[in-house]
Image (cartoon, rainbow, N blue to C red; front, side, top):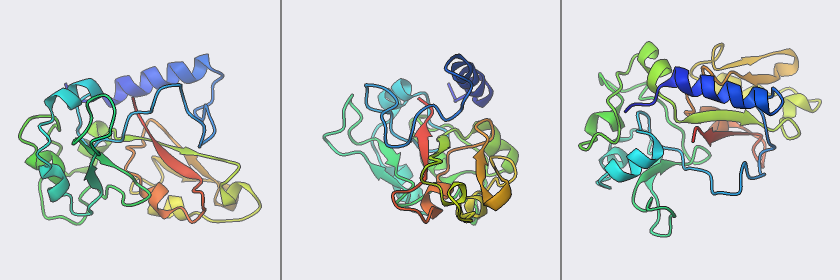
Length: 202
């Protein structure tokens, strides 16, 4: 079935409260768990296990992406994920087909197997159904939290004011319940290593 954003946010909030109430539970660069984190999937992807078993590795989504943000996972990928599509926002982010003359997000439109559920290219549909991941900030690296003013991530966010807000010195705050994980913030971050990354929902 398609990802239910409200249920995901509900569960994520419960975990955050259990572990101390912070939505930033670990520093970027540190493993969130002993296992390898799940890769970022295209919009409309089924839950990870269902996605891996349903995707036929045709790469039509990769070819259809107007921003070329999708790529095939290498043959060395674990857990049977070889050949499935993933994205690395630092290289290229999902632009949510913003400038495309299309009724649907391109990758979801061409998927023949149902591994990607069809999503209309409408703001309400995107905010409800797109759940690639959630952006996380490393406050030790973010310029705006360290005596500088930046704001690059906020200006790049297609849902600025909802998924991300800024305070004094353009200090960004991510709102997980509204973040779709497009990666535009990660792509735009001028810090190296970058101070904001998208983590998988899984």
